[in-house]
Image (tube, rainbow, N blue to C red; front, side, top):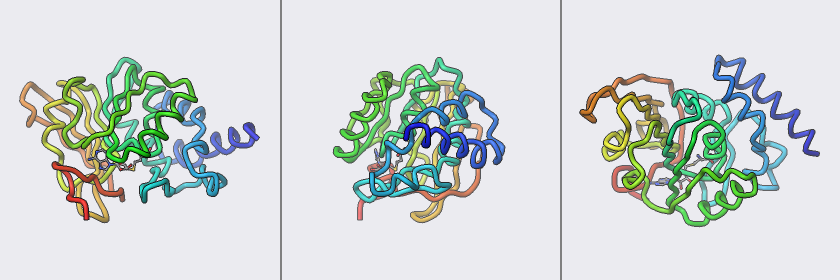
Length: 219
Ligand code: SAH
């Protein structure tokens, strides 16, 4: 059984990740290792390695594997970094980050998701992830600065508190745009001035809403 999923993971990385131009070897190794099928519901476990996002609890989604790879590669992790994730969701992205960075801080606004993700990550012996229930659009001020910040929900604009918590030289990846489609943006902080940012467009994407004081209002 485990072996069957391992084969599916290797195939996923080969056909969805490497074939699309991702080059970070450590990242690919992490995606070959983390058991993505444990992060989805039993009922859809056979789809866990599909080339698509999948529903998780509370009307949220686990991102498509390629999007996880694209966003993670943009953080340029070497193993020493302190990373902040906004939108823990299933915890899958956090697990990938945990394998590639020194420490991961992840914020989720829905308590039930945070609890489930915490349990899963502990079960996988990934003890370098701290999960907190809060409005992540404020960041995690006590732990700043971060070498990487990844927002895994769609924002109307770059949430202003986050750039202040990005280390000089740090990378921030965030989907920015409308409620239904966004552009994946990468910002690199260039100096002490938090507004001094290099901006790159990584392409179109579609995420669930980032809901919070510096995001969208809940319906
Ligand atoms: N990274 C996740 C996918 C997350 S889906 C994974 O790997 O599975 C987006 C998540 O962001 C949802 O769980 C949603 O509840 C959460 N979210 C939305 N707005 C948020 C906010 N302001 N702060 C923290 N989490 C938020």
